[in-house]
Length: 121
Image (cartoon, rainbow, N blue to C red; front, side, top):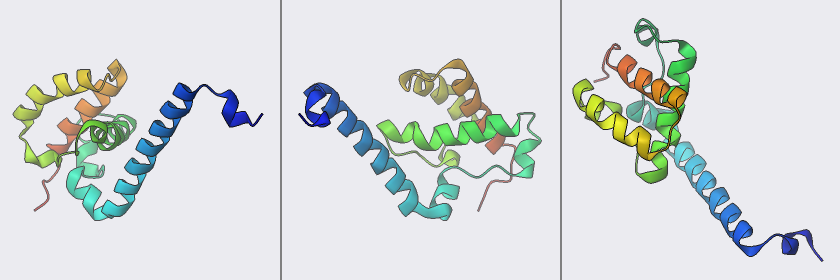
């Protein structure tokens, strides 16, 4: 019997859906290109690093913002909201995305650092 037939149908369906979701996310990011991603989630720059957060935390936060947020909805450009609005939005969204404490702190640090950087025109 082929190996694929020994896997329960429910597991195959979940795997297929998971693979399709990841493929869609990767394709979306690839199609958007670097300029599109920069508009949505600015890359880490020297000004952001002066915000007091580590480069590792900021990179993780940006990655989470681009990938996790896109699982449920289109990731909004960071600057579509004010820093105060993000303060109200993030707790619910991090909870909804089931982020752990480190992930929550990282995405919060990234959003905070964005507002220390020069906002793109």
